[in-house]
Length: 307
Image 1 (spheres, rainbow, N blue to C red):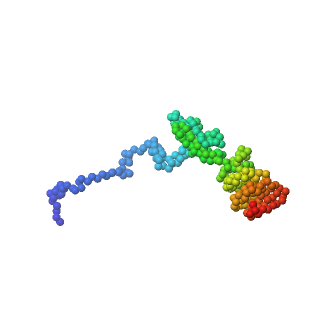
Image 2 (image 1 turned 30 degrees about the vertical axis):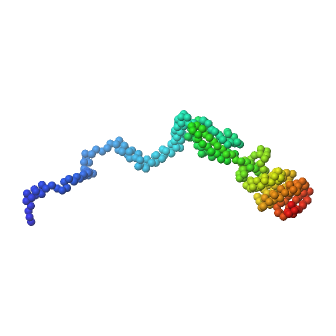
Image 3 (image 1 turned 45 degrees about the vertical axis):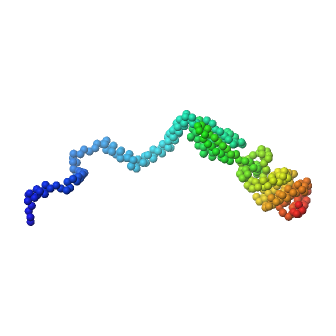
């Protein structure tokens, strides 16, 4: 075995190491048993403080439970609501003082609707912040009024609310056991009214009458002699119509092709003078034969081509 000389050993020792420039950082931890006698234990107050800090940590489940309980107490006690109301009131005061308070409400299109009812439905208070006015909710309340078919509510800065109302158009009076309803052309009811308040509207009766009356009323108006004598329209079993003429004369129309029979009735009134006779009922349900019932109960027949 070759021995290594001291000089060689010194030469190797003098040779710089390749890893000399590498820096290594080490963290030295003392063992649990080291310096146990020299370390001071924390006092009672320090231990209590550490426990409280750990318990009140946001990561601690008990902290979340406590927060939920506190929020529940605040909400149940009304503290959050009162705080929110106070904030809104303060903001409204500032906005109003700046000139953005409601000072005027302009209403257009209301002919039958009382302006006081419109103001009540709007629910806006004088001087209220125009920004805080809920115009969408106000519109929905307006639509609940009896005569209002549609409405538009707009802000007009700095302090004006503009309301445009479209009212329902009465078409006929519908007699029912519960009273007389005013109805629209579509058949929707407006409300109970005294018939004397609308003397020029046609009077209809029977189940389903409001829904189906418009075509018949329009067709009758196109026949001058018939229209001048009609005092009412009666829906029978929601299938067909009777015309009620002045002098208590009843005209029975068929379920189908009743427009042609209106032409026949116009001809009978104008050219035949049928209403000058003592007639109580005219049956036009058959297209080939017409029947007349006199007031004494006697019946007469007329062929369609003879009319």
